[in-house]
Length: 253
Image 1 (cartoon, rainbow, N blue to C red):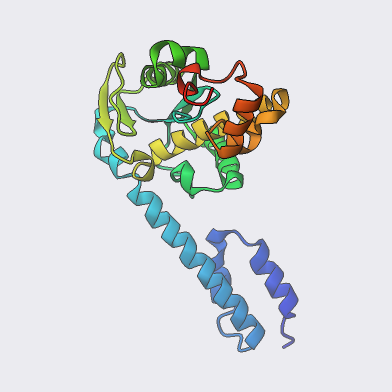
Image 2: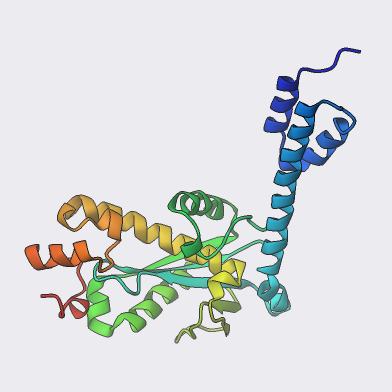
């Protein structure tokens, strides 16, 4: 019997979905060639990493399962509390916990490319997503914490169905009806909050890249409005833009 060429087997494994790998590995388990053995080793490592990710995601659904009987659950998080410029953005996300999205994590632990990929997947697969934005003017008028709450309430108002349980990243939000569960470092412990952190972060980063086109001297595409040395130097040289938070920059100008 003529054995398949190793190149053909390699292509089969390359094109196989993760769910098909175990069956494919069984098919070639008895092939004694060294090249096939290496293909099987790589496939096993890929499968092990996938199963490890499945376990991680299931652990991040512990709060969702704990409060599941209380009603519809959403996760809430924000991006942009610390920058000198730009809005603060909040997101609220209702996930289908029976179809969890892999690799969702605290947005700060993900690369920009991975965040962008997961943003699209969350928007496609989530039951509902809401995004709220509070402008620099609002931040200056009522302070960053209250502006954060404004953005969060706006995000929640866009959700359908209406949530009954809110998993929040360490805060209790005034003016929201329902059970609130503040979780310290929640974006690393709850999949719903982590998903919200990704939506908020990507939304704000995209806005800052657009602002960069209007105000290229400040390099907003790179610093996202945070007070880097280069940003502060530009602020001292050129003065504030309309998107700078006046209450945040008094020490610099």
